[in-house]
Length: 632
Image (cartoon, rainbow, N blue to C red; front, side, top):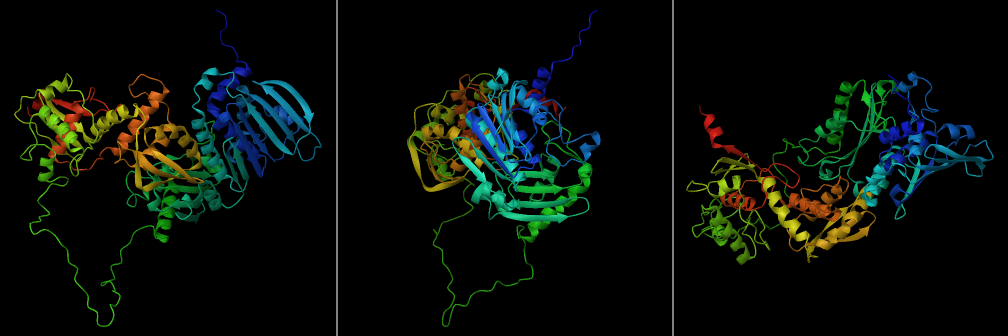
């Protein structure tokens, strides 16, 4: 039998390594900028063309390279940063693996100019997919100027799966923010062709304010703790600034960005009773530890770090965050020593006047339900007696007819029925069992303020109330968005929208579609926008929440949500889902019997009521036989 194991050529090995190290244009910028920082650069400039597909150029004023070093830098596992395995536990540089430059040149065309301070001339190097085509002397400034052209030109599958220019630019800006935050003593600028950001050297806080402008300046609380094990410094946000969307959370260890769920949990846990459950605090924390107590050689991207004293650092970090929150008055407190609240004097001859409230003589605050009175039920055509109709088909017909005649739902109604179109009747299977229920009257009960429990011919139906509402609203919004352009309803009090630099390109991506369906968004200054109008068919939406959710969705992989179609259909599906999620009822809301009945009726009138657009199960059928077996 002949030998079958062969040594891979260097070009193939480098392309395999590039799959781990270089995932998108932002990865190239990370590796090149970190090399510039390691070279002692104090001024780093980045130029982008076509979101990095055509050109990524990084220019620095570092120490540069000799002609031999310039050639060796692109050899695999060639590095000046470590010499032995022991050096891995005493790292003071960003790079050390010797894989980044070989990986980049394996999937692109590179032109580099570099010169050291003691050399009168520099070196120009041309490389095409690991093949050195030319090396010659040239005139250039001290430092390194490296241009990465036609990224993934020889890996068409990887190039094909790059996202749109706006999405890739968003990732580039996010990477730039991380790099600029860590290296606040270095001047850093980026030019994407459409916009330019120039950050001057400054303190850590100044760099935070320069990147995120005036959205953070008054909300930062400083942290400073120094122990024999670790030194922690930086800033956390006040509880009132906790973000529901896109929290700014950065952990930096010895000048290196890292992801660490364990320490993230320690910080977030300090805010547990201070912020809403669906929000996250912002934090910018720097750790300084002994290099031999951490291991950064976990992954080629070097973003994952293991700590030798992880368990010991946890209480130090928690104590530092809690102390900062308490010291700067971010934790609410009650003074039990004060018995009487002082009142300002009224003045001579003035007597306090008891306020009076006008109210009807027959007013009873306990007469109605939490969301609708019996009178409102009657106005909504749920029945003359105010009691919901027991037949689901009749209830559904009355519900829709009432919405059409009134033009709006009753006070506190669960669903805004304005402008709703007729929907198709119930389907087969479980739905038939629901429709043809033999019991004299369907009764809906709410369980744990989260589920609706009702009966069907085949057993007991347990329905997730929020998922059901999301499905209903999604079908409505999808139909409307896919239609023609819609009118805009102006807002009396516009919503202010503060966009981070990394989110600007994502907003550019979705802005045309938002304008088409009826949103009106106007630019104010720097990173501030104003939402002055919403679609006329969805005036009850939280406009700011919808836009921020859509910005987040742009960065996600395209999803079809069960609908065949092109990228436009997928974008419409995403937009409809975001609007539905924003407008749908939340868990914990108590529903009246009529609200539950109308919600269930509308759900089972849909063509496919089983799953949400994102694939989550909406209801579960507990069959009669299964239920009876519980009592055997």
